[in-house]
Image (tube, rainbow, N blue to C red; front, side, top):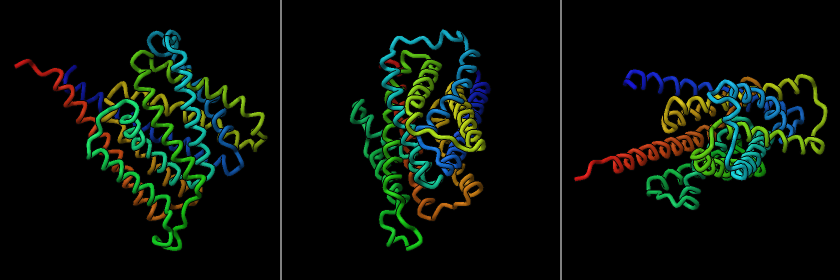
Length: 312
């Protein structure tokens, strides 16, 4: 591959990732609107998966090998990954029902912080002092966003609801756990199988919960739920396609555009504006995640150089 082609692929990967961030932002915004009509997290889970599954299936059929890519040699591993993923999504959606859109999105981006901690505890990866410092900076950002010391920040900066913050941090922790399992699954499983079976499991779990929490909504609300599924399915495919064009360390930083998307959609659709605390905390969380991604890229490059270095 020539340098020009490589640069073009990286540019396409970045463009796809930016589009994925936009699609995820749309999904979160329409689900937040749906929550204002009383839609619950399990309902969001079902409709997002149900309407997103056809999008994923069409994509699978267009890939080399088609349905053969759905075959798996590790069904139990998929089940475990899907269980973590479904729990994570439910927590994400519950956070959306409890917190403003910008704050809910910002807290979700603490996942890289937890991923660093889990990689140290579970995968026994070496984590240097600079990455631990990035973790600390990220948690300081969380404290600023959640505003537990509102008397210091000012009377107009009330602390966020504890339940919403708790679900948001639980979602980030579970998302980090999913990241760890994906590292292991991608060694043997086709990405089509990983995405497809997760959507199937989400649909099944959502369908089982629907009789207990589902209810009738306005047609506009059902349209929002259908839109969330389509946007979520498209976002998942755009994100996957970006990884086929460029390394994850290159495209992952563009995920933080979702915070800007949440701020914009929140101001436009819900007439809510983030406080100075939220913006400052979001900046620290984003800086922590970006630095962690950069250090991971440097670490992998150094490891590659060591393994490919000629003998002396």
